[in-house]
Length: 75
Image 1 (spheres, one colour):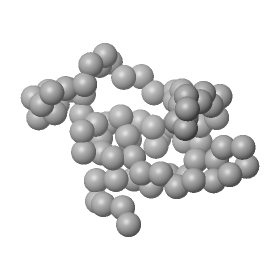
Image 2 (cartoon, helix red, strand yellow; image 1 turned 45 degrees about the horizontal axis):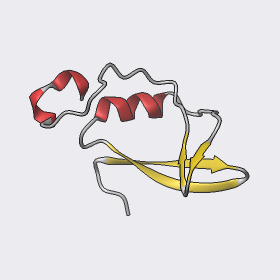
Image 3 (cartoon, helix red, strand yellow; image 1 turned 120 degrees about the vertical axis):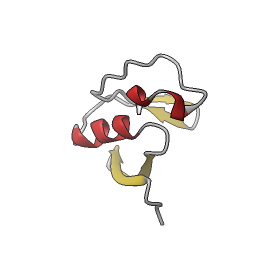
Image 4 (tube, helix red, strand yellow; image 1 turned 135 degrees about the vertical axis):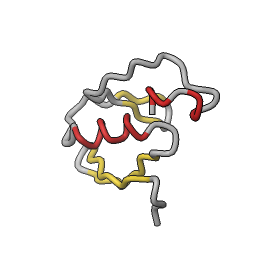
């Protein structure tokens, strides 16, 4: 069960489908941009058991906020 501040999406990799949650708690604008750009096709990169892929979303922050309440421009 997903919480109110999460959005569930389906990711398909190599014919397998997975449901994942995007958490809006710390960066809801980024989550909305990702969801708004769906469907996304990207090359998967693996590192151990982890997977990574590019998404067509611009994020102007290079560093995470230590206090997400301090700067609304990244939320």
